[in-house]
Image 1: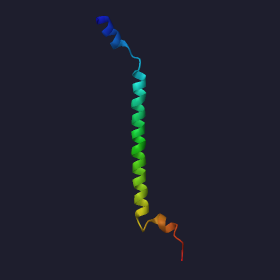
Image 2: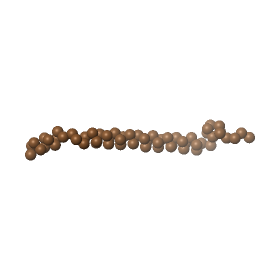
Image 3: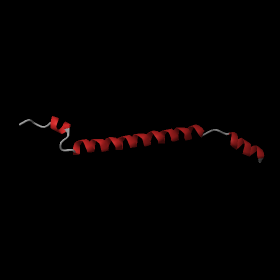
Image 4: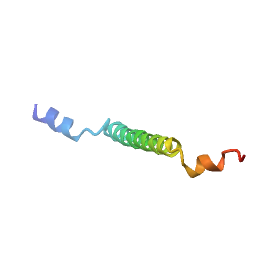
Length: 61
């Protein structure tokens, strides 16, 4: 029984897959957070009626 337990503790197969899964999760969370903040910034930019960008593209009378 002791040999089986020691063999289980020394076995590292699957550890790399778990590490890659954690890295992929962190990257996905970073992308989701970044896209959310970008969307909020665009909403703020275009919701302001006196925005310089809106005025720049407004047709001149």
